[in-house]
Image: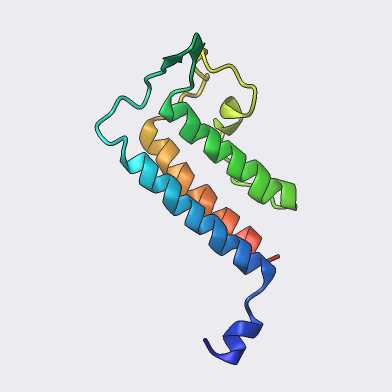
Length: 121
């Protein structure tokens, strides 16, 4: 690494790199679900879990809220995001129920915007 590159390595860029590595880990675990029912909920000790689909959509909401909007950014304008916010009812289907493909595309789009926001810190 050159001296110039070292000087340009800000705290924001370090955080963005760490977030990107975490995203790689999340993607690794999501890859283990290929071929599985992404809408399936599980009962564990009397508690019904959220489906992988719901968790993925919730991660979209969380990254948009925590990594972009809470830092003063505009956030990505996706109509269904708030249907998956914290404490939203998991049993009810959202009014604008996005397809899994739409959620995956948003997952990628929001992450790119979050990395840009955090890198600029």
